[in-house]
Amino acid sequence: MKYKVKCWECGKEIENNFLDACPSCNGTLTIEMDLSHLEGTSPQDLRTRPIGVWRYDHFLPIGSKPVTLQEGGTPLYDCERTADELNLRQLHVKFEGANPTGSFKDRGMTVGVSRALELGCKVVGCASTGNTSASLAAYAAKAGLKCVVLLPSGKVALGKLAQAMFFGAKVITVDGNFDDALRVVRELSRAGDLYMLNSVNPFRPEGQKTLAFEILDQLDFQLPDRIIYPVGNAANIWAAYKALKEWQSLGWIDELPMLTGVQAGGSAPLVNSFAHGQEDFRPVEDPETVATAIRIGNPASGRKALKAVYDTGGVMTAVSDREIIEAQFMLGRNEGVGVEPASAASIAGLKRLLDEGKISRREKVVCVCTGHVLKDPDTVMANCGQLIKTEATIEAVRKVIG
Image (cartoon, rainbow, N blue to C red; front, side, top):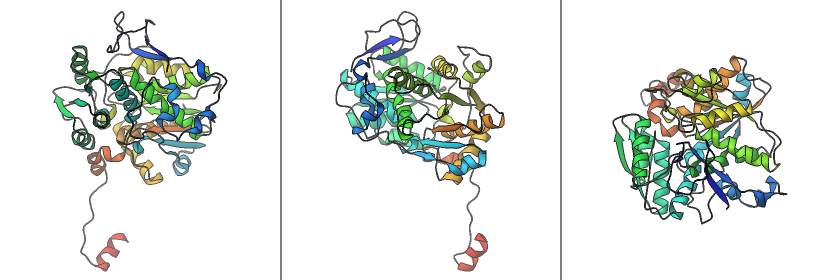
């Protein structure tokens, strides 16, 4: 595939394969795909392959055989009961918990680890609030690479920590938050100790683009009015914008859905900026939320995310931890879909924005739910109430169930 790595800020073309920022302005990097070979085609032409990340290989900057665990192709649920409860015309949930390691991170990691092999790397690494570490560890194992992950001390859900360790990663907890861990990983990468696969690596968001492609594909290329994303490090909503712009450039779609971002109230630097119409943001120094996957105070793709929201006419909002947990249980008990707290932020944000009149109840909405409920079983159990104990007799059980 033909492509260029460029600075998103100043446009400088980047030749060094191991940079994570522009050497001229320190701006974030992005990939510009050459899509000229697709002129005169249609998205239906992609359907010769099974749905999944590599159905869209024409849009991915990997020319070799990919490292894959058959990621993507996740369900798009029509959530009629929840739509009725919210008095909303139509609601779909894109359930990324059905990916191989239980989160959307697998989409970016199949591309990122494939790129690491192309470059001849032997060690890959990342900073993580949990899902990235689990995904990288699995794909590194598949590729036969050594894996190092740095986690913020005491702030990673047990399910994610178990995965990273199970797949053989060297797991290190640092005394600090995610932003501290990311700083150290960037320093290790620049010193040549490892190939960094956080989303500041421009190849990661390329895989994450396929989430948006799949949504449109599963809706038979009928655009929803709005797509709502939980926002932590902010690469996912930016990747959606990039994906949609690529299809628009080919004439495959005429307009873009409104991209809407939801952050946790204790970790909402982009929401604060959006409220004032700003294009940049001020980091939150000590982010706190039960939704650990989006507990990020200095999102690496923050400016890109703001542009995605502004350019599509979307909005950003923040929700409380209580709203997140309530949304998590609403989705589980209405639809049988189990998502981790950060995932439920999109549902909580939808409810808040409907109540505030910022989303029309006549809209067709897709909420992205990024990870599986079993990623964070402790939070679920803490909010389910007590187990019911009784004698082992039919009479005792009948009395309990009423």
